[in-house]
Length: 271
Image (tube, rainbow, N blue to C red; front, side, top):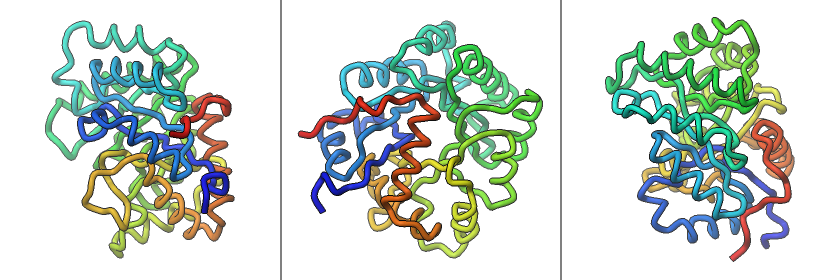
């Protein structure tokens, strides 16, 4: 299959600032384009990362930035870090806020502090008319409760969804998109409920991502991930939904461009 025959895909969540990717960004983006990935949302976890991904988005066609402070990083946020996020968020290269959210898996930050920062991201996203990228780990009920308190639909995505259909329906009812990453491709029988949920999500609420350099899909499991490998997750997602990869790619790319206001004309350049 040559490049012109590849379905166009968007990796909606990659940590391009991570040291495993940043030092070879040109190679990473070339690999992505060769795999049919035409655009990438580079997602930050700290104020410093936010500066970095914005620079990447400014210098590299097809790369867009999301700025914010990850829940596990909130304890370490320095005075002035949130003000810097607010300043960066209005830049046109910034297409989302986050990643933000809640995490009970790691005991790195007080939960009330995580909730405070999550609310800050949600309010700033509302003020700017930009979507929010939400992290949730071992705290689905907490996420749902905090979002329901807003009493309005939320524009954004729960990234790297790992739950079952009942949980998916709660997230969809709030107004969010759901994004699937490499875990969808893992052979574990325990993930069959995740594949079931992926098969049922309305096609207009569906996204794909890598969460690179994490969660590398089969057959690359255990290795550093990168945006090119979103194609493996997309292929599995198409399989569980009974669609062709081309159909799935058209839908998820359209959804990503609509949610993040990404212009079709700005694509990763070929090497």
